[in-house]
Length: 247
Length: 247
Image 1: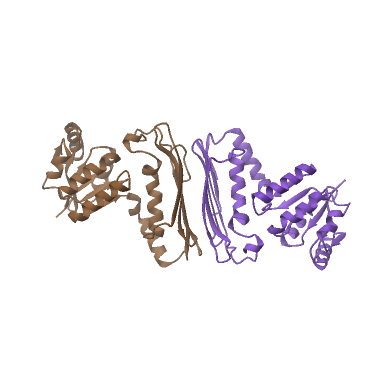
Image 2 (image 1 turned 30 degrees about the vertical axis):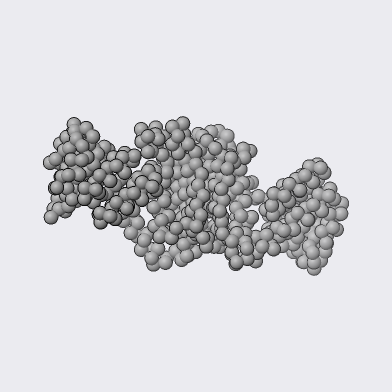
């Protein structure tokens, strides 16, 4: 039987998610419901993507017995509330990145998911690119020797994007930094850095417009990450070991 | 009349310097003397490079009236002493990088040179590559727009090199980091960073085997630099502005 998805929030990223899901066999994945704060938006979304049920509240989606798993595609500051609601109602969740706005909220969701014994995952799509499987294979095979350094940067001019406001949870770390951080965690994790140094700048909205961070794992193992919302960076990552480098 | 060079120390880097100088017209540059702690080494060097005078002490070189300017090519910890001797004797100096081991020694040399009204320069050869002139021209022309970020890394496996010992002044910062730092200074200088964060690791010899630094110049202007003595880094530099990037 197909996994039956419910979609929380009818924004752009939910469109992208449902569109991507639609290339998989209907026998495996089917979207059965969508909810938005405004019923009209949910209905438009349902019509566009040929979804059976449309709700004007997240509570209705949480109660829908036909929904096996919920994709949370709302703006960042709503992730905690919507995901808590879904988990409390017994729904496993795939939550768009960033999972929440901070460590406290993330711990809250993880604890709730553990208590309820429910699946909870942050939707970092890049981690599922085939190149990441290759990367994992090469790291496991020791091709690079002793891995010493991750150098990664991500900068795109998104300062004009509506989301880059404090109340919307935008910014260079939550919008871009997570992609760099998950790479460092993939390479050096599950070890926790011995020392983290970070620096950045806030724009007029009080949002981080740039960030640079050093994650020192000890023994010469370091990740150097930088993000920016005003310039186009090379957007490259290097994983350097004693025997070679993956770019 | 040709500039008459005296060479302090007959090591490998002095060989390289004299060899490079030899491609210039003799009417412009001529090496007239070399000094080493051992007279035999100075004599061998003089024979190899066809230099008239060879001395077994730096004092003799400092007193040689035929020497217009001294190139100091000794190991790092001797730079302060030899350069002080030369400046005190009225000789302008070109000192191999790093100029000294620390800020205190550097200030000492600069003050001495100022008092004596003598030329003193750190021999960062890369700064004189034609590409640096191009870089300066593009920065001046504003091709990159508002320059936001310098991302640079330099790592080569030099841990086995004899110099990488505390008493010889070796290490990833003094051996490699200066090249990155001078680039950041060229791009963002003469402004001083508002904040500097740095992290690194020491090897068994107590020498920094790796380093990562964030130089935050404010207003979203940041340099992210990393060095390593154990792996081969991409050894690339990016200068990112709002309108473009130079690699």
